[in-house]
Length: 256
Image (cartoon, rainbow, N blue to C red; front, side):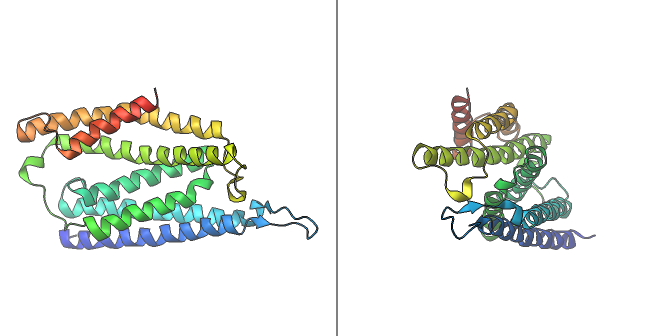
């Protein structure tokens, strides 16, 4: 397979994954919308009946799985086309980060039955991939000499895994804040009745962050070592470096 063919196939697989993420979004939206039910005309209070939409919900999960597999193939082919790991620019970082997030979601779906997260997860994945394709795309090419280092694999792999899991934890924490806001006032909206308890959301978000925070810290350290090898200095206070250390400090302070 030529490099050009691999690059074209990578693009096609990524576009295909976006189609299936869109189908997953539609399926999960229907799951929520069609679960609203008034069981009897004499009962004015509307209720939720997710048993009626269980099939479309499972279909949405299947679409998410297919989309993740297609995206994984697209990421691998991107690496094949460039004869290196596919983490050399923001486009490649974004599609690989989306893959990490999607895998984290599928793990949470299998382990903790968190299908309720499918709708916002599909939206986040489509926004990430859409931004990557529309704004960040770069043709497949070899790395510049300064970036050719083993630390590329070590640093960027740690950052991608951390970023994907942090994004999932962020969605769960955001859901917690929204639910907490409603429960302090008039109670949960009808469509959020199926969401887990606040304590469960808080515990799961904390566990995810506690799991990958050491990995994120390691990625910052590895990036500094790589910078010294490439440019002769460990730290330069450029925007990316500054934001990385500020983010780590904020996460650590919030979850101590």
